[in-house]
Amino acid sequence: MRMQTGASWACLPCSFAMVTDLSVKKFIEMIGHDGSAEPYKDFPGLKAGFHEQECIEVLQQLGYSCTPIEIVPQMIPVPGVPVRPIWFPSTDNPEDGNRWRWVRHLRGTRGVITGARKRINDDKILGHAVAWDGMTIYDPQGKGLEYTLDQIDDYGFMPRVYWKVRAI
Image (tube, rainbow, N blue to C red):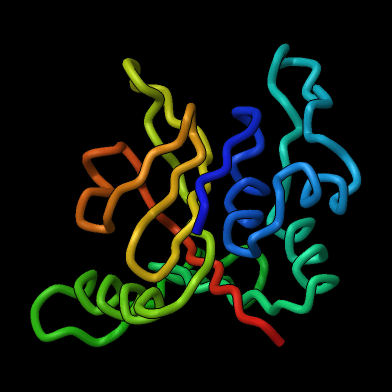
């Protein structure tokens, strides 16, 4: 996988571009907008960015499927009831079963991990996406960072969903 970077609000298409070996420019062209619109009038400077569903449309055009694997899946069976987290079996700690399952899906596959990260030199939390090649994380922030899954906390990244990408 080759590191690719772009605008700070474009980590999602940058990550999917890395996974599909397409240029970021081409991937964003296929989405149909550059994410720079500012639709939040009460939050000046906040960009529209991109949504996973926009990227999935591009993946489909390129011949890929995309399966979301959440660390802690949640469900609401009917409106108005509390959110129910799904815990996968574990011998000691329920969260261990979920983390183990999530990592099992990462092994030997390519995809994008979405979640949140702390900004460098401040505690503000932002949505973020990184590419995964089966062994290494390719983080498109700044000039790009490469690190392992074991180092994820060192880089302030808090994963939530793995978007497993496969050729169809």
